[in-house]
Length: 494
Image (tube, rainbow, N blue to C red; front, side, top):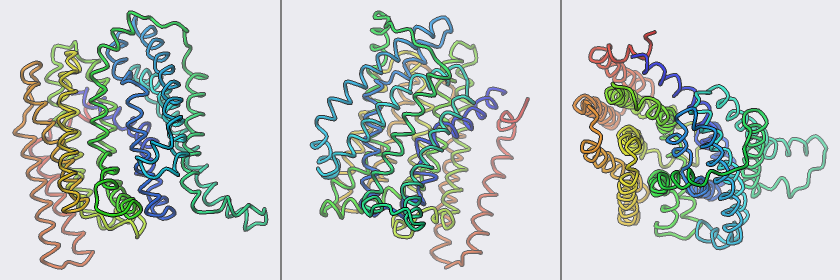
């Protein structure tokens, strides 16, 4: 099973190359932001990046996935690349101007009208990221993972350096006698500095991509574009629903809780901080998705493709269960990634990591509609999921608070998995071994419940709790070794 080793390597590389820059707030900057930003500013930060993720769907028109479909053959790649890139660039410019002229109204809906400058910042960031998305998709399709990674990490380094300079460096310069204006040192400007740093990094990335890697033939193949749009438009609802289902709850917490705007923003900030911890699981899930999507298309013509997809899903399921347990069992340590004022929502973590598990399984099960060009079914499934997310948030948020948002996400992704499995068996039957995957999921849930019961009833000290949790985790690892050692050895076999 050398394909597992290849996929595992690409997942690791894309985890570094894509997830780190896209989820800075989840990883490197989470300790920093939760200590230097106010609760309300941190809530606004999460909402505007949610808005940015939603915009990315429209700015790119899902041309990354469409390019995988039409550029998978080498002889079609240059033509498909040029057509997709020019279309996305023109669309991004149009949307940047259109939405920018309505920035005050957009800001009022998202947070408050005085935040219109944040809308402009986000429009610039997303416009540049959309332009870069097709070149990055080509690097992924051509398996140029190292180039992909170092360019993405350049984005990370620039953003980190600039944020640290603006928030910490300016105050140090002032202490050293450089007489920096108090306006620049005002903590209310910190959120501006974060956006400006990201915008600068995105600009540099676009310049690097075309300086180092690509030349453009300035001509759109109109018949090809029509075919690409026919394939890609049903993926728009999929992407929109995906944003609603994964991060839209941050806005819904602000909107549907029964408090004033500022207090709801603060609650959204606490909820967002808790999700940042759960996204340690989402980090792996998203990295896996970025590696597995081109993997699906590259291997579609092989005689054993369906068998490969089934085994890939099984390995993903097992590793995800292991990661869920690791996050929940060591939460007493992981919590310190957050500032103390932001730790009030950590009780949602078990539910949140399970929702990411089902999201990852959905990425596996959705292979059938992408390979059979039945993307309209993906739209339908995703819209059902979005309806569940919105409906449950409306019902649960006023009654039980933001734990209701986590429950809504879990229900959404579970239903989407079930629908995708049912429809996939009709149009593209993959021999998944559901019994095995369900077994490991049930065992991991049982171990989490057991650890919770022991923590609550036995009043354990930190060291004893750590020893017990580690023992439970090792029991699970032993079960994997005893039942799946032949399967997992494919990750290491030459």
